[in-house]
Structure formats: C-alpha cells, structure tokens
Length: 265
Image 1 (spheres, rainbow, N blue to C red):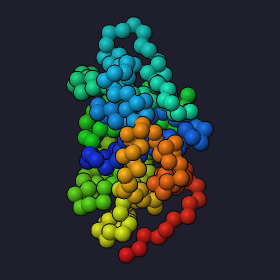
Image 2: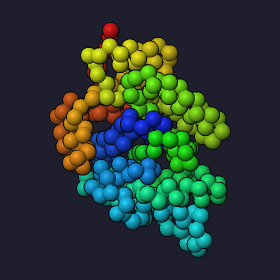
Image 3: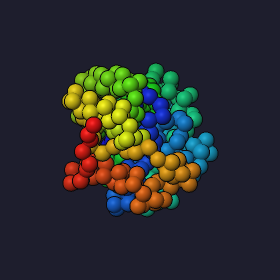
Image 4: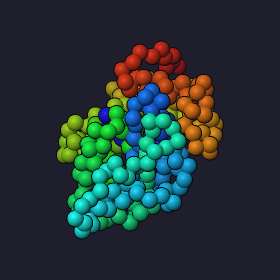
C-alpha cells in the first residue's frame, strides 16, 4: 500500500505521523519504506540521524536522472537507505529538490514518482510518503503516486478552512490524474481532550460527513523528545499513551478492532 501524508499547512505533524506509522509497520515485520519529498528533510533526519544535505543517493538523485541524458538509469531501490530499525528504510530528501523542481515540471515528469514507487512495491509491503507544506510539483506527484491519503488536522479554525481547500484540490486531482486515490482519513493531531474547541471542531467535521478517523493524537512533549533522540515512539517509549494512540491509529487504518473512548461534549 502506498500512502501519502499531506497538508498544505505547516506544523501539523506530517513528518511525525509518517515516521511513526511507518515505524509501527516495520516493527510488525513489514518491510516499510518512507519517501521524504520535503526539501527540509525532517523525516530523513528523524530516521537516519543525519541532515539530508549530508546524504547521497536521494530522492532528488532518483528524479534528476529522468531529465538527464543518461543511457542507463539506476533502479529506484539504489536510492533506498536502511535505518537503524529493522525493516524500516528511507529514500532520503535533499535540498536539491528545490532547484530540480522547475526542470521536472518543464519536462512533464509528474508521473515518474508513481512509476518508481510501483517498482518499489515489489520489494516493500508498505510505502509512506512525506510531503512539504505546499501544493507543488512534488506533492502532486505524491498524490498521483499514492493509493491512500492521510490529512493531519490541527484543531483550530484556520486549519478547518484550509482543510476544505485541501479536499477540493485532492478531488480535482483525483478526477484528472488518479481516480484510484482514496482520502483514507483526517487525523486530529495535537488534540487536547479537555479543551472544548478541539472537541467541538472535530464533532462538527464528523457531522459534515468528512472522513475523520476515530483516533485522536494527543499533544505531548514526548514527541519532541522522540525527534531529539532520533527514535520513533514505538522504540523510544513503547508504553507511552501517545505511542498507544499511534498503534490504535495503525490498527484502524488496517481494519483491526480498537476500543476507543467516545468524543463527547
């Protein structure tokens, strides 16, 4: 399964959600790949412990060969790096993505990522794609390449207005480029269960018929500690409540039964 985690708004937890769901997948014995399409390289640094600027054989190198005059292109799996965690791999980001974008767009290479990920699907059970906080060439490429889309949602009114725009953009892209893409769900992130506004916003989205997932990820300093230690929560704090929420989210996405507390006023 190819999943993209996407939101045009920054600071909503895309990289954290991508890496922690991928880490749980890998811990369950599934060969799992994270593709980091954000030039900032947060997922790359989180899982490899090195800044993207220090790495070679990145997703930028993979895409650059599609516009270069080369006789033989390297296979997509040659740009995959092993992480310190069993079954978990990364195709790292690069600052070069910013400079490469115009070339790729001019050469109409919007489907090249999908071709690469389909080939990698023979070697990996699950692929998660992290994206930049923008609807640019790379995020469109990821949405075209994916089968499922997860949308992190920060529980405030600005995020709500942005959410409607995101869903409209995805709907248009589905119609024009990827009819198989499914919005798998909206993830309420950094949720504060004792505050009335987040609960009210989430309930209203559910009442509108939007695909809000039943697991809400709490706000916790433990996530920042996880970033600092370069360890996903399943490895750093396996018994922490936020880790259990991520595990519940993973189960929901895979159709497994989960006991959840009701969302009430």
